[in-house]
Amino acid sequence: MKYVVGLVLVLLLAAGGAFVVAGRATPPSIAIEKPEKFVGLATPLEVAITVPDAASMKPLRVVFEQNGKQTTLFSLEDPGKAQIKQEGTDKVRITANIGKQTIPDLQTGAARILVTAGRPVLRKMRTIEASASKDVQVRLERPRVSVLSTHHYVNLGGTEFVVYKVTPDDVESGVVVGEVEYPGFKASGATVDGVKITDPSLRVAFFALLYDQDLNAPMRVFARDEAGNVARADFEHRTFPKPFDKRNIPIDDQFLERVVPAILQGTTEVKPEGDTLAKFLVINSELRKKNAEKIASFAKQTSPELLWRGIVFHPFRNNAVESAFASHRTYVYKGKEVDHQVHLGFDLASTSNAPVLAANRGKVLFAEELGIYGNCVIIDHGMGVQSLYAHLSSIDVKPGQDVEKEQALGRSGMTGLAGGDHLHFTMLLNGRMINPVEWWDSHWIEDRILRKLKAVGSAAPSGTQN
Ligand SMILES: [Zn+2]
Image (cartoon, rainbow, N blue to C red):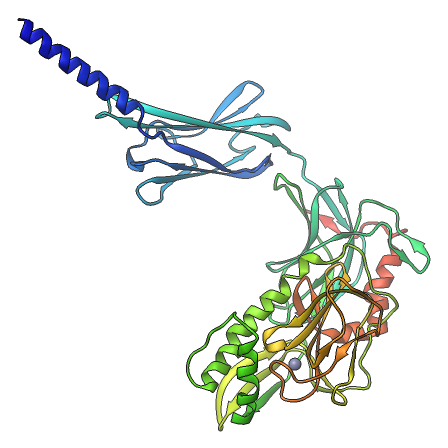
């Protein structure tokens, strides 16, 4: 008898011990990844849960709590429209939508998201639970946006300008062309022809129809608040095709031997193998792409104010145009076509080592070697507008330096992928290469930009909100 009691006691102790040990097993780890802070009319919810045996996770629940009322956004028993996806053996991701559709009583104000997850242990005799919560702010009022400027004419590869009004004051706004967004900037503070703009709700945005975009690419002004509520406004516009020329670029061994080793010495971005032609092809495609990404990365450093002055950018009139914007180039080596690239800039030749002048007033953002561009300078003119100067033999400016229109930046040369001494020049908008010819045309600047700025004091909205 004594023996039996002892055995039972040992078994009970063992079971109790197992129960306690099981209780110390790792609980699920919960991360409420989205929303970050704000919930709008329709906001994505994303919860990631890490747990050793994801397939057996139970319970699993996501609850939205506002004004003391709880709404279940997801549960294993009733997932509704939410989705649960297992990622590997130890991770589960729940995606759902928070908004008026899922929570009819949703109101502007404070709210909380609560997540509970559990895992069975000890042959499902015990469950270890974990929970997480996040405080959020609900915003249900859509921003408002209306377009004030009229007559928007966009050339393929070229730029346009729009003036619009947006409320409330703190929302992000701009123009979207196809998939490409251009930020808008506050117009207040700017003075045009003695007219000072004071309305804090006025915004302006430059936007482009990139050389490879469709002429029918949708163009709209948008405004988006932190909760993801979006308003859009159409504006009247016309687009015009632009014929881009095609040309063959013969390349020979002498050219390859000069440019390929020099470019590779100055970059760690690509490490091509093979003969000089093979290396050239990597430089011409991969390095060209990486250099374009680097150039685009300066867009976010743009000044929110217009830095340029006058009615025209320096037109480089003393230079012969060797190649115009968006020329479609076929590279020919020993009679064979070896590559195709689009040349996004102007090649302007004058004398060797000629002074390279700033196209307009601005701030130097970049002044060093950049792959195929050789010694390269990028100047910010504000509101997303920048200019680029390439193949310089020497650079006389430093990043952060303010420059005046036609101030010397350095001297022309043939560094990078250049067949001879010339200046490669292009304008950039929000980091994308755009046709500079418009900026050399005082009529274009007057009509596309200055006219619209002068008109904003008196004009009534011309756009429609949807
Ligand atoms: Zn060029």
